[in-house]
Length: 239
Image (cartoon, rainbow, N blue to C red):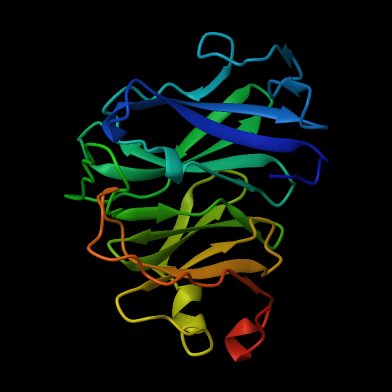
């Protein structure tokens, strides 16, 4: 993701096997040209980056509740890079967290305070995800929004930009719900969307069948179009 600092920022996790529960160690690197990479403090990284040589943001262990598709970059109002992810808390509940690079290093803050919710994913293939997260987005000069979807229900967290403390947790809105009236979705499919982390309002949208753990289907569906969604698409403007 290209930041206001003109760095490309990437995050990833490591995995011990194809099994989803073996994800561990949230990691980070940045680059100005996508060729030469470095740590967040400017220390050069030699390629290939390894678990030993890379920068660990949060040393989440194996079976720690973190998964690879839910580590998402965003930015605070000052342009500092942030990451949204989830892991188990001390009680074993799944919680949303954010990380931000500050002068002393990476600061980790718990965003949610859920009780009795644990997404204990296991195995391989495309999972039936109970959580989806988006990267942090600035709201004015002193707030940050973190949007997630938990069991199909969107939630918006509002954080204080200085302390990263949670100010509120309220029901959110799904872009897919607003687009369904203007984008045809074949029967048996759902509309997927990916929004620009920079907050431009631009997004991609495409319908697919639900996850099937990478198992074969009885038939092959017709291809569906990938659409470029521009701001105001809910009023009928898609590309």
